[in-house]
Amino acid sequence: TPNTIQRVVPYKNMKYLLISITMACISRGQAFVMRKNSGVSLHRIGATKSQIVEQSSNDKYNEKLATLNHAQTLSLAPMMEYTDRHFRHMLRLITKNTLLYSEMVTANALAWEMQEDDDHQVRRFLSQGQMASEGASVLQLGGSDPVQLGLASSKVAMDEEGRWDYTAINLNCGCPSPKVAGKGCFGAALMKEPTLVRDLTRAMYEGSAKEMPITVKCRIGTDDDNFEDDSALYSSLCNFVDTVASGGVVDNFQVHARIAILNRNLSPAQNRSVPPLKYELVHRLAREFPELKISINGGVDSIYEVQEQFERCPELAGAMVGRALAASPWQFAMADQVLYDDDTETEVVKSRWELLERYGKHVDYEEAKWGAIKVRRFALKALQGLFHGEKNSKKFRIALDDIGSLPKKEMKDGLISGTPCSELILEAASKCLNEEVLYAKPEELTDESFEKYRKQKDDNARSVAVKEWQERRQREEQKQTA
Image 1 (cartoon, rainbow, N blue to C red):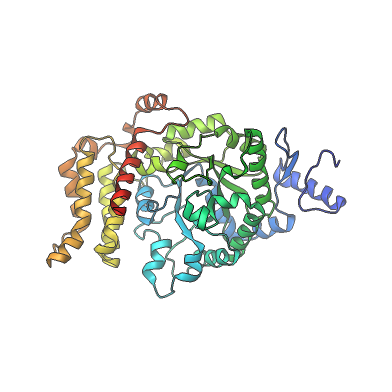
Image 2: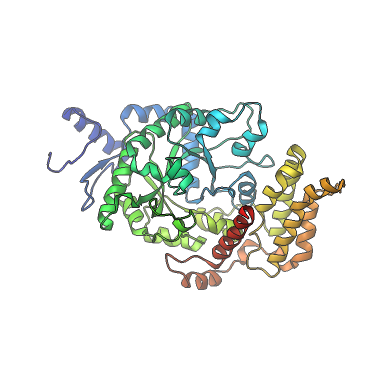
C-alpha cells in the first residue's frame, strides 16, 4: 500500500510492478527487504528483467563476474603511488586469490590527455606485470563526467594488444582528498549525487561494451549533511546505495566505515583516522541488502581481523585491506589457505627468498623494456615492507634505497655496472637478513602471535606495522615538498 511503500523505482504501472516483484523474488531470492528505522521501508535491486537477460547472455561479462565474486573475499584497497603494477605483481606472488585494485586513474587522463603513441604513459596507468598473470584485478577510475568515464572504460576494456586484462572497473566515490573531492568534484563528493553516480556507472558499463562488471567504492557518508545521529547517517547511506543500484548496473559496493570530512582542512591521512569507524552501519547494510554484495573497508590490519569481520557479519561479501598489506604484506601469506580454503601451492611462493628471486625477474624485465632510471625506484618500493618486524629490516630498506639510486648515479658518473637488479636485491637480502628469516615458510606465522597482536587493538587503533609505515610515508612526503 502507499503507506508501506515509500519509494519504488522506476515503476508507474501497478500491474507491471506486481509482475516484476514476483520475477525478482524468484530470480534473486530476497530482492525485497523490510527495513526498520532507516527512513526507507522497502528497497529493491534496480536491474530490470531486460538488463539481467542482457548481462547473462554475455559470456565475457559472466566470466569476469564469477572471478570477481570469488576473489572479493579479500581485496587490496586502491592506494595512490602504491598499488601500481609492481606492488600488485609482488602481492600476486604471495596470494593467487586476493582481488587486487589499481591506483585511482582519472578518467580525464585516459579519455583526453594521454596520446595513443605514448606507450609509456599508457602502461604507467593501465599495464600489468608481464612475467605472470595478474589474475583477479580491478581498475579504479575517478571522475564525474559520463562521457569521459565512458571513454576511459572503453580504453580499459578494449586493449587489442593484450597489455592488460582487468576483471572489473570501479568508480571512486570515497576519496576525501581536497584535490579530488574539492576541486575535482568527484571522489567522496559524489556521495551527495547518487543519481549522478547511477548515470556514471551506466556510462562506464556501456563504455566497456557491456563486457565488464562495474563496482563502487564509497564511504558511509560525508560531513556535509551534519547528521544528528547514526540513524540519519544510515538512512542517507541506504538512499545512496539503493539509488545507484536502481540503474541495474552496480550490485557490488566497497564501503569504508568512516564518513569523509570535506568541510575541514583534513589531509587524506587524517580522513583515515580522525572520523571514527562505524562497522555496525556497514554490517547492517550487508544484512538489509542481501541482493547486493557489500565489502567492508577501514582499519582492518590482518587476516584474523578479516575473519573477525565475517564472524561479526556473515552477510559481508568481502573485506578490503590497504595500509596493512603495504606495511607488512608477508603476514597475508596464508590468505589463500585461511580465507579461500585453497591449499594448492602452485603459483605462490614458499618463502621470502623465493619471492625475491621471482620478483627480481619482474624488475629485470621492466628495466630491459623501459630503462632502469624510469622504473627501478617504483619497482623496489614494493619490497619495502616485506620484512617488517624482522631484525635488520631497516637495514634492508636502506639497501633497497641505495640500489634504487644507482642508475641515476651511474649515468651522472658515466659508469655502467651491468649487474642485473635481481642480483643486487638478493645480495642485499643475504647481507642484511639471516637464512631463518629468508627461508621461513608462511605456515610459521603462528596463531598465537596474531591472537596476542589482535588483543592489543580496538576497532579504531592501527597495528604497529601500519603506524610505522605511515610515519615513513610522511617523512618521504616531507622530503619531496622540502
